[in-house]
Length: 117
Image (tube, rainbow, N blue to C red; front, side, top):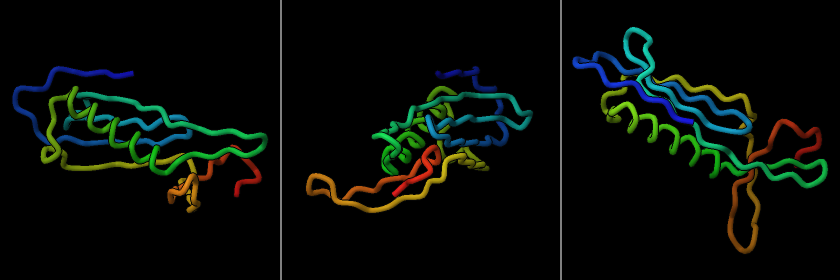
């Protein structure tokens, strides 16, 4: 889901908020008055196999980057206009390295599972 507000004529500070949850990464840009300038969300893939739940750190990071870029585009904001960043994550963001199909892969551990890695 994406939302955008028309950019103000004379913009002051722009604040970027990023929230990473188990199912998606979300980004929002706000002006000095707390008005939402633009927001975007990008899903994060979850792999379940019985009692095991995994996520990819790479997928999480790509979801963050995608949501931030989309929010900036919708708000007509360039990176150098962002004056402050707030970042939160409800997922553990713990990770491990493994080799899968001959490639080194980062695997994030999801908090839904009591017996991760």
